[in-house]
Amino acid sequence: MAASVLAVGMLTACSSAYDAEDVAYAGDYGSHPPLGVVGYPSTGSLGITQQVVWRIADGKVGELASLADKDGNGASEKTAENWITAFGKGARGKVTAEFYDEGSLRQEVVLYLHETDQIKQIQVRATSAKGKDIWRVIMDEPSPEEATALHPWVPKKPGELGSKTVR
Image 1: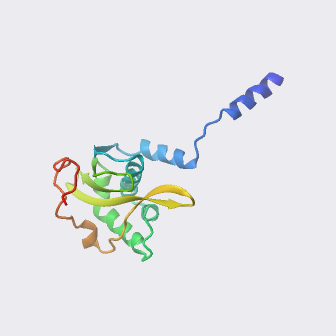
Image 2: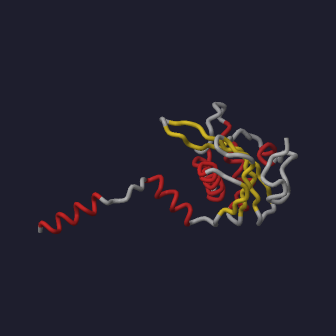
Image 3: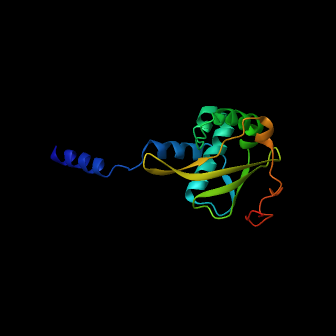
């Protein structure tokens, strides 16, 4: 009896340090196609970019909007709807994300959706919430035209600019 109590105590003491967020991330990672990566993402910029692609692919407006850096003007819900409508099919297939410039605080990311030959540029940035550093995406494209527009500097294929934005 004492041995079994000791064994249970040892197993409990050595229990995993994973929280619900880690478990959810692992589930998402395992249930979506791998994201191709070009450039030099930080851990945070890569993580938020993966989540953006996964939420677009899954068609989850509320969950995608929750990844937004709060802009205060209510555009994130409409932007999420626009992104899902415009890029949902492509996000469910092969996607390459190219990370531009240095990514310690913010990063330009270009998503290449190979099955639909679409390109989407996003900006991700580090912010603080409840005393913790987190990464968020800028979501201020409430019209479908804004959501699908490309900046002139965005190349048609990953790696064409060497992951450096033209200034």
